[in-house]
Image 1 (cartoon, one colour):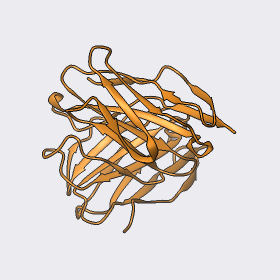
Image 2 (spheres, chains in turn cyan, purple; image 1 turned 180 degrees about the vertical axis):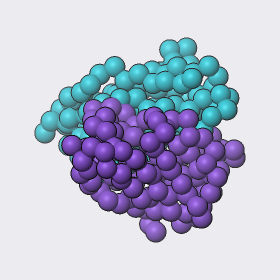
Image 3 (tube, chains in turn blue, purple; image 1 turned 120 degrees about the vertical axis):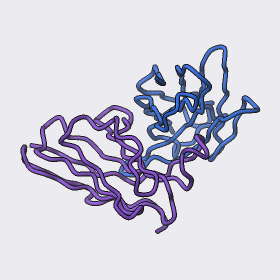
Image 4 (cartoon, chains in turn red, yellow; image 1 turned 90 degrees about the vertical axis):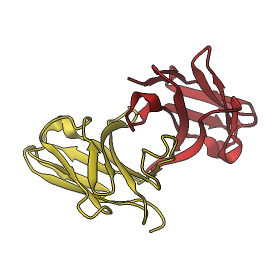
Length: 115
Length: 118
């Protein structure tokens, strides 16, 4: 079984400061890792994914994430946060070797960027 | 269509009523998923279709929940005899390829159907 932990409920950051949203995962095999963002009354939107290769993954809107196998982490980062980045962020994992096709999501982190 | 369309966006049901939620995926997308998102929680997997075949329904919480995709495009999630614990946002997502070809497929989500059971 696969699972994701997002330990912080809310992340507050001043506009222009670096933003980090934490995620750790648990799988029995090799992970496929994803970050999605959810704005109010909108569906989840894909930001980036890690499949294999370079541990640093770059995605949409200036976001990036670093895969760390030893720490089983996949933290989302942005060097300079914008007010428009305020939203709900979800980390998700799929263990492809587990033979299932479902994504396991974390509970989400509310990001608040303060002007 | 340009995106995944879900209807109704909001549904209020009295306990014991049956409800049907519709998902219209992106045209040509092979895979279709249903997720349930309770308030303050992340989405939880319900069921998965590849074309018209329901390959995984292990996430459906009870036999009151039923999903179908008879022609491999539009899908309907039906909940019979609704209970208060069924109150949630029901998300539909689709992806271009079947899951057997790429477990790394990106899902495109609809805006969801918010169900409130009184």
